[in-house]
Picture (cartoon, helix red, strand yellow):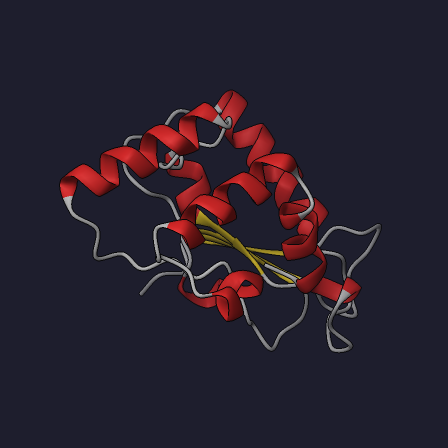
Amino acid sequence: MSQNSVHEVLDTQAGRHLLENAEERGYVEPAELEALALELDLGDEEMAEVTHELETIGLSPTAPLWRESLISCTGNQFCNLAVVETKQRAAEILQYLEEKVQIDTPIMVSVTGCPNSCAQYQISDIGLTGSSSVRSGVPKRWIGTKP
């Protein structure tokens, strides 16, 4: 998550509520708020409370399978090496996949902005990478790249 995205989350009412509750319970130290660091060693009762609080402010503690399986680098918005924008493209791909494609097994999708491969397109099931030879904003595509 980019620094700008962290601030956008913290600036929402839901984000502030979540962080305040996490800090009150001792899950987050004040210095960790920017990093949104939560300890994962919660007991069943504590986990149920946190899950309930997340749901009451409109946040789900679990992610749909596509959200767990899609990764993107920061792209040219934040990286001088990237030759294409990746975050918006990944968000559009994710929206399409969630609306149109049902899966029951993870399919790893990677969107990276350059051949340096911060999002590791080479080991994904479907990998997209930006290159200087990109035509019309369409990145190179790699399908079935896992060994």
